[in-house]
Amino acid sequence: MNSKILIADDESSVRKMMTTALEDHDFKVSAAPDGDRALKMANKDDYALILLDVRMPGMDGMEVLRRLRHSQATRLVPVILVTGMGSTDEKIEGLSLGADDYVVKPFSMGELMARVDRLIKRAAEELSANPLTHLPGSPTLEENVRGRIAAEKPFALLYLDIDRFKSFNDAYGFAKGDRMIKTCGEILAESVLTVAGDDGFAAHIGGDDFAAVCTPEKAADLAHRITCLFDQAASCLYKPEDRKRGYVETLDRAGNMTRQPIVTVRIGVATTASRPLTHYAQAAEIASELKCWLKQKGGRLSRFAIDRRRA
Image (tube, rainbow, N blue to C red):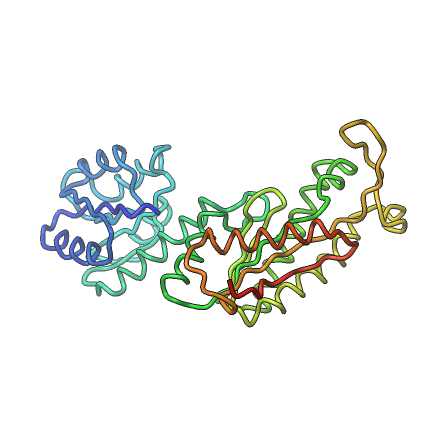
């Protein structure tokens, strides 16, 4: 994840104070004493966030912000405005120009760091979010799992996909296929929130592949809820006649007519309850292996499997 932060402030003492605090939190910091230099630096390098003083000589912070938001290279970079005034009119102007947050001098470094961390994490999730389901993507999923591993927090990683999704897409078209994907994403997000609460995490890896993270003791309940809700919802997206007979007819690659059963989800679960998981790739491989094993077994109902192996 990008850890570069740009500070733009004409007070050297403020620049030094913020630089020290940010570097103590492992951020890479660049600093500019005025708006002109800050704008040049922002367009030249890739920053995760910009701390922008409103009152600066020459080009002030508001004008810098206006130009940042009009530039393709910087329009999505989170900006925290820093001011000694804090008037309502100034805040309204800054927010209307596209500022993401506001801090008023004097401020505590703890408050500033909390705002910085929140904005950077939110920006990373938005950049990786799937445009169809609005769920975070693979980069955010990996970061979530790696954070749990680093903190030595027990976790379970669920990998799931829609089995026979291609047959549904072929029979009903891309628009209905997107509806199936959105339905799966909605079920996943709702299930994670209901079962795992704020500690749970749902992600859309891409296509018909999804993932979730929760504590090991919640994994079975979460997987069970997803499979039950999906089986109820997925069949409703079929035509009544296809739903009644339990399959759709589609052509295979050789041009032969085949019968494909109603779609299901297959969920493979890797968990630290049975063995230590020290890398994201290790957990992902185990979950993927179980998911593929379930797909090979077939069946007309959604199923899940949890890894219980010790090695």
